Image 1 (cartoon, helix red, strand yellow):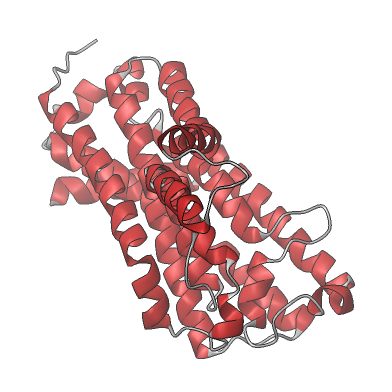
Image 2 (cartoon, rainbow, N blue to C red; image 1 turned 180 degrees about the vertical axis):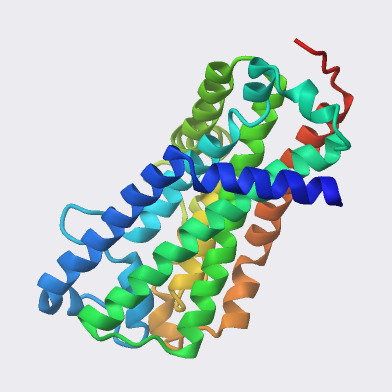
Length: 313
């Protein structure tokens, strides 16, 4: 336990004082502040498009002009943040020759990898919660919007989901940092997988679904639903899709279904918004799947690292 604490606080100090943390924090903060500023300058235009019942939540999902929403930046740049913090966590120590020196101290291997993972995840959490609180303060001061208790709970769940989501990419970056000796190789492979899960899997899922259940102009709604079910089943292999569905249900209390079912105007039939517990029931499989992906990826990293031979260089 003492070794874990030493590694944790040492890595935390390195992360918080590093240039990459400052640069990432500044970029995301600048974008978030810009979105709030543009909304404040065009408040009458955007408020006409925002639901008055959950105005605070909608501001996180509303795009401002040419700038996408805050949720888009978390979904799109979150993987990159996790990869940046993880792709060189192990192989950089080896290239500098400090790995064997560290392990020659009374620090076990499991304490080293666990400390690095927890420190990186905590740093990401500090960065994310700081930006959310800054946006909250700006919305209170500039727009005068006060969130209710349910909206705060939903934002808290969104924060937890974001940490798990970015934690998967962090664990994947650590895995490739263990497998590959070169930091450039681990970074490229991580980015390639991110591109695959974010973009190419949609095309692959559509092709497979169309091959199994072909669609044409005469296809019935039942056939279209079966095609969409197969496509969604393949898409949910991707952590990006899982996170997007979680965010939709958490920040849009009226969301009840995904895929082709969401195209049906259920709000006309069921106008009442879902409670937090009901929204969690909708996304519980996605939440469990995202947690499982993160834990499996880190477990593989842990096993490989514990079995690798480390020599002094």
